[in-house]
Length: 230
Image 1: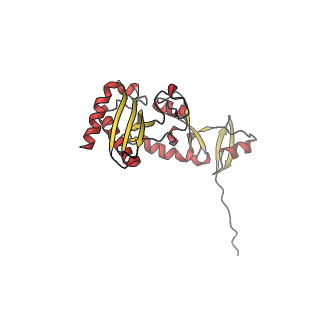
Image 2: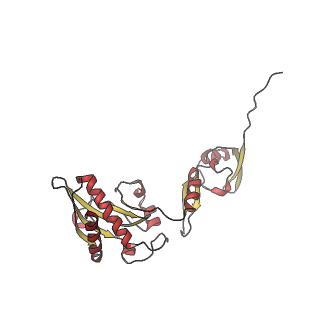
Image 3: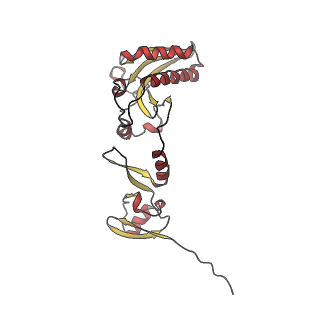
């Protein structure tokens, strides 16, 4: 008696434009569309597929958002875990203007209420926030932007300007709907982030502060910078 190898193929059924289609497990959405005779892939909702990895891209709903979002299906478990976290990420940092978070301006505006455009190619008279502004992230929120200039020979970092977002400056809830940001903690965090930037670009030394918008937030930020040097 000889054994004959048997290959077991699992299939899944999904619906594309109202029509049921049965395909092999692991088939991409594009391949499923082609099996139906459709060259243009149709997006689907995650719960319509079992297992979820039969689809490469899924449409998801975000609580509080009026529009639908696209996500890689393989990222759905990670998104579910993130939703169960008791609180958002903590800490303050400065982003590069070329950080991947900022690649899609419309997405950033929809998620964070933050309209960002690098203005290195904008004539100086038309710049709104500075030449090379760095977005400020605090506890998962984009609360403003800072423009700084390094003087390496003097070992000095000059913060030419800091522009805080109007909602943050007014003490209003964040556009994400996650509540009001602690202004004192954010100011202290920004001071620490600027000191870290100075260490990176000029090897430490002095951090000087020029313009802050709104002006009334300049004093607490200046105090936080001084406290960090003490």
